[in-house]
Image 1: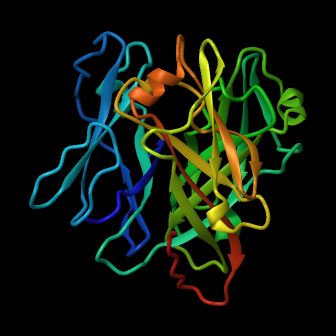
Image 2: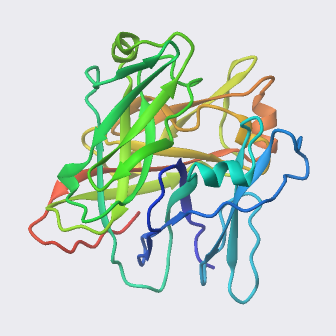
Length: 321
């Protein structure tokens, strides 16, 4: 049996042509633009809708995602993304060009063809801009990567405090071959607060390019029964060990939360704390959340990390651990 893929997903807008690539012992990357109609059977249909159901052909690979369905012959993986925006419908989403970007690591029979790059904004000096009284944004420059067209981006926010209840860290805007914009929402947030709390953006990207900088990645996920710890009445946390990667310096980490149910309404999955070369901490917030609930629902953290290094070739093979 092939190992389950580690998958990270992001919601983007301003869609362009989708990118479809696969790499042996490495990446499968896709940007899906069409949002289909599907109401979650246990959800309030006035507010909670599955706006995107993505079918991905993954021969000889099993799914690591909750709710995934596969056939015995082709193993088509169905990934359902939920939104809790009031009044959201597939038409609403498509009118705004909402689409899902994702990067997965696993085993495929195809040769590696994907160009990788990663980075982060400056810790304590990110160029945050005030958007309104409750939001800030930053334009992230990825031009060092040398992408020839818009790649697939996945992101997270890191810092010292107060970002685990923010929203927006994995929702991308104004994507191009040389960068993207991220808006972060938190009541009363200011740019000075963000930098004093060391908020900064981590990102990884995959696409077509001829630059001399590429990422050397490492991936993983916490156990099926993750060692969640109590934080307070609405929150839990887990310390994630990445020491097997052998990083000497702290890399950019990008993360997501998977499970059987209910995690789509939580916050904190792409907000990382206590980052170091050997690990990080993730706090998850949801009203009434307990350690027992998270374990019963098989909540676990998927993560990817990697440094951008320099190479003298224009075609780079990257393999995941």
